[in-house]
Length: 87
Length: 287
Image 1: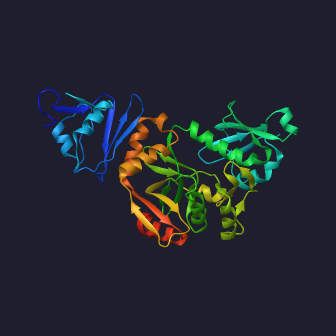
Image 2: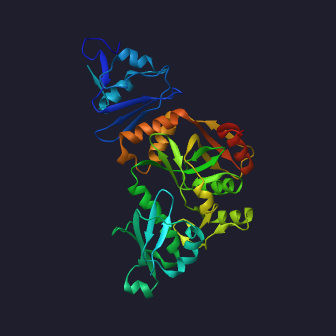
Image 3: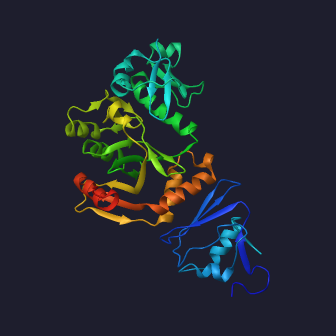
């Protein structure tokens, strides 16, 4: 499982990052206030992801479960891009 | 020379120097506008250099000591002025979200047409403007970041190549400037579809839809699709002139806009179809 072990069980938005999902559940958009960059995940969602506030936390499994074809690779890529952090 | 005041509605440019050859076009397009007391930009069109004044003459657009474009042949002076005004708005208005998009309004609802060059956006805009729609802008959607309404601009549509004759055919008495030949975009002219008096009655309106038009003359049957909103979001971020200046405000505005409106991609060959489609699917038929 992706979340085996204590550390990294939960994820949250990195400080200064905003996240939005769309009403047609077509994906996610992230915005970095620090670099003014926007990043997209074009994967269909089962339900809206509530990571509106940087302090909101969500388990990795729960995050992946929001996507129809969710993969740990999505979390890893978002983390590598500095959008998500594991807590 | 007496300055010419170009009142574009939300903004005004004071044109200090310009060749007399563009006076007819200036008067055709902006001759009826009522100048405001204060101008937002000071611009001029001047010869490139003393040598270039006589040898293959060139013209330079300048705005508040900045020269954003390379000199162009003297015959393209009016087109250069319009492109320069676009540059002034795109680089100085940070109070609105500016999208590279046409805006057409009917039944008090706006449709945005953010499209790549060659998609037939300006030709479609002109046809709709001739057929009962209000042209709020041919080039730049000016969006209020709080109310998400589209603001009207008093600017002409830029028509190119074969579209010039098409527009003349659709409306023989249309106000169209003299054609500037051999520009980077081919032959270019500017067309106006409303008077200052008509423009003055326009109000900011709610945006009802975003349509990506794709003209294909060989198409046997019109096709339209809804597009994933996350993809439209990515497209619009790329079409925003001032996204990086507004930062989070632009991100949030584009998201709120996309999440509340209908979004379509339409492949068409028949302009009547577009009118019907927009009324049926986007703005409604009114009361």
